[in-house]
Length: 636
Image (cartoon, rainbow, N blue to C red; front, top):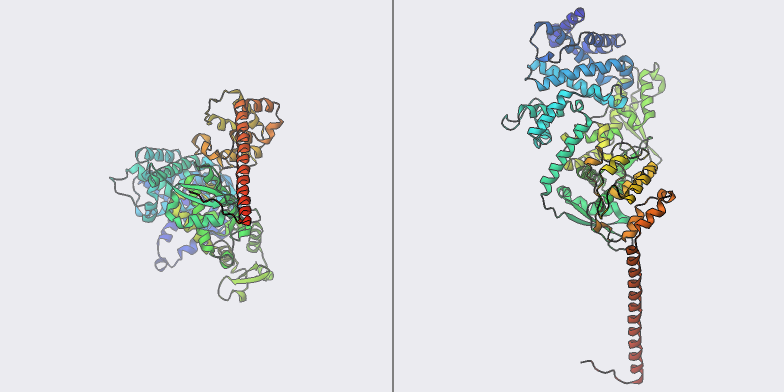
């Protein structure tokens, strides 16, 4: 260990010198240490550091005995950072076992958190801190794809406590200041009189290493931020914006009515549906109709028939490559769909749309690399791995071009000027792979993603969303799990409120919950969709859910008996208790109401027929008098 530390001190001195001073290129030295001798030097550096782990306050320490460890961390940080920028996920896991990576993450986590919570660092130590943050961020992204360590390895109790204390002192300023912190830099701070030091440290943690906080804590923080924003935006009295949309033209009418609203989209939107007969559907939007509209709108907008989105082999969606050339006003449609998705997140309406992870990275304003190719096309990713490992690359006949099939016509694009005449060789294959991934994941869909991000960012600031990873953002947008998993019926029952004389101990209610517990997952999610206009349960359980049962006015078009019967899913009809349930539910009052409704319709029909008969009789008399030459009597 001492010998390695001494060598790292020498390398650290060389890396700190310019090429003109010592005649050595520092970056070339790092590349040799990272990739030379089969990455054995990198593995040895990691093993030595783990054999003598430094204290968490290493970068704050002025003890002379800690200087060799600082040099060791400096060299390892430079080498590992360079390696992570180039190596593929498969190479990383092969060279550094998951257990070693997990121990490295735990070590770097303690150092980084101590740096943020402690006093300001010296400039040279601050650079090392930023490099460790970069390494942690890259390892976190790779862990989202490969899962080489559990959540407990990443979470820091000290960081969670600091954020909790900051929430107590400054509940409104914590996430709101992330935009300012993002623009000014992580090391900058707001004036001391505005933000206490604990709040400043908490904001830096959320900005630099949000993954050291539990996902549930970040969700709660995000939910509280949205609640405060909605209250500030709307105030206590919000009349909202009323729109009418045709069910048969959801995307067209939604675009025409909502796109001009821009910032006003943050207000409450009250929706009225126009039926296929051109009539306004009865009922008042108390929230359920709006959720149904957004759910159906997102379901319709992302279908391939509109040409705006394509699907990966795993049926995950991303912007279609040639949509800008094919779809009229595609840029505005992408921006509109970005606003719609942002509105759904703003209102905490779950939209279970399976977005590809490389597209979600764009919403977080991240840059996609070669490792993200697997989320676009697993076969293309395997081919890239083959090209990188092949011995005879020249025999493959590859050039610096990519080919696309546009409605049966082959379209060839050069990755570099003159790329069609530039063969891929063993020397330039790494560059070819990087350019290919950059074109597929970034360049080809740049305009579509930019338009979508413009709309989404209008509703949700990007700096606030960056407290989540791509995988976590997918959960924020669409909810956890899928519709093949059963919902937590016990949690749903504990957080259900009753009215009309019913309670949780009522025999009818008890039979209802027993029946719901017997449903298959599909029926349970269908019931949840009927009640909440969303098929998935809330992220943090029904206790903190924003779901509200439809108001009575929303069901004005349905008779109470019909409403109660529809709430009984089909499987309950197979239960032995269904007959008793129906008898208790359909009372004599309901039968009387149905009888009087039929009587009213019968009387109304007689009135219409009688009036029609009187009109025909008067016209016949007038026609006969005109034929006889007599004049009809004058009216006074």
